Image (cartoon, rainbow, N blue to C red; front, side, top):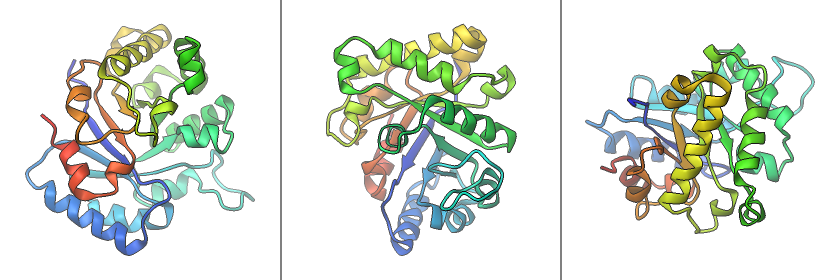
Length: 250
């Protein structure tokens, strides 16, 4: 389909400034001669410095989260203009930890998606089911609710600039990983939902990434699947050697 392939690393709440800068240097050194699109999501305080380090390289930088308002009395939040001003191209929206630890609703996530497009930021929209939802056969239902909620009121033109990350919550940080077949089926379901909303052309051109305990030893099987266009890596993106091994998968 000629879809974009994206290898993204979400650092979550890890790394001091010195460690973060060192990790980026290691990645830039290891990515010489590599043309794949790489995105990293460092902690907020270091985003601007890291974005400056990565300017003109294969690495793009994103924020892990943002508020939907342009400005205001929202202590501790980061606005879309701040994300842009930091040099970030992307923002993660609806990561499972934001949904299930911090209680973000589909409505709030939709507001953030709208704000991302309004301010020219590319959202990587995260969807995925809990363990009990999968065991109860509700994966399709959950994905439908999350996709329809995230894209409510979003034009096809804007939707075409989005990236989806399927991350089964039961496989994040647990050491469990969805089999390539399970992941591929879920990605196909995501595409079918996008097709229902916007047509098959947009669905077939939208990158859908897999996230959930991605490591060097399981990337090959995932990457081989037709509906998996890259990965959103957590813990394995915190070390240059393991993240580089994932990025260089063949």
